[in-house]
Image (cartoon, rainbow, N blue to C red; front, side):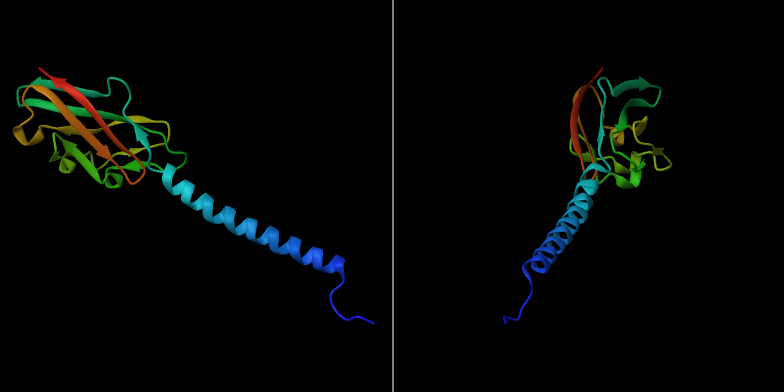
Length: 137
């Protein structure tokens, strides 16, 4: 008489191991994908405005949260630049943008150096970096 595991028990153990590994892989990959999509946003067409008022030229940026479940806040932005100058201090720190919602996140005078001409605006979170241009009068 031979001793060992019967073939049926061996198949059941292999199936359990396979299902366990698939579950672990799914948990790991869904965490990575969620991290990459949360915090994503777009700047809609005509979402960057360059205006002049009594205090000078200022640039305002409208964004739309394209994430699934997380609200976007000013603290989520790791990049906020106009023509390479850091304007992160001009982000609206009290704002909370729900998924699929659009709001103005930035209103800057570019440190008094906005002036006229084409300006490159760059905003970014850990999930998305968007570069766009606006022409100031």
